[in-house]
Amino acid sequence: MTSTSLPLADPELSELLSGRLALVEERLRDAVTQTDVLADTTSRHLIDAGGKRLRPLLTLLAAQLGEGQRPEVLDAAVVVELTHLATLYHDDVMDSAPLRRGAPSAHEVWGNQVAILTGDLLFARASGIVAGLGPEAVRIQAATFERLCLGQLHETVGPAEGVDPVAHYIEVLADKTASLIATSGRFGAMFAGCPADVVQTLVTYGEKVGVAFQLADDVIDVSSDGARTGKTPGTDLREKVPTMPALLLRGRVAAGGTAADRELLDLLDSDLSSDEALAEAVAGVRAHPVLDETRLRAQTWAREAVDVLAPLPAGRVKDALVQLAEALVDRAA
Image (cartoon, rainbow, N blue to C red; front, side, top):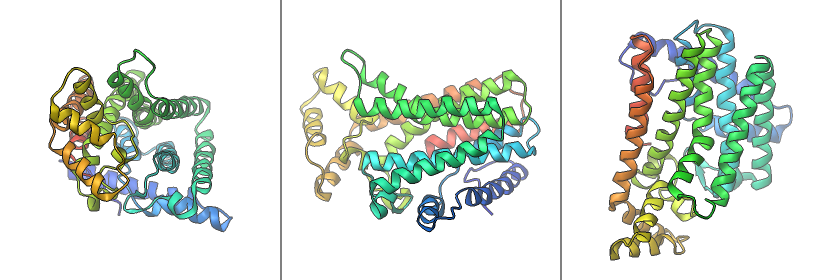
């Protein structure tokens, strides 16, 4: 049975969600089945690699605020995970990431073009399923997809002149990561028949949790063991992908900074293609205060997400949503 990977205090709820996640897993595998042998193999690549299944978990959990057993909820959970998986195929090409979930990235195995087209295939399958959920679901999915693309676009081109890089980065995270997490919560509450105010609470919660989640990922990128994360530590540093620790360091140097700040920034801006250079850069960021500052920012966004839940009725579902927000920033992988 698929684990929720979330330390829920309520064993009954944990068992319920695990059972529902197992059904989602089965439907995911059915959804990516292709008659073409190559397409079938590439489409299953990331599903076989596993993952947290955070987005379908949130959909299933949010649905427990209403009629959580409705069949539409399972379809919605499949849609958000298929959409997420599709973005990973594209992201790994954009970031030149060699590993994903401990396995070689699709572009490392089949090349960039096949990886991109596989992502497109999964988007197509997600679209087919969401079409069965009605026009409102299609509209929400389209708006989410637009934000996912804008987030990647804005990350790629960087902030415009005069725009605060940190504020720009938070906007990127909101679009590229938080938008789909918010839609995950929204679909769960919506298809479980929850009132509009409850649905909106889950949207706002998801937006804030999504930013917290990605900021925590920025910390994990340099602080964790690659054997646990399935990614090479410092991959974002090597590929010059802007992350919060690097942006905060750059801001310190722009404001004057110390000699140590400038030395570390020079290292981050240098060629990190060798394992030795990357290890030195990772060690430097690990020892610098910007890493703790990033962790603090992640915790702040998580606390704000918890505060949003105040109007929800007390109970095991609300408690689990609080635990989810806290777990996402305290994780090591």
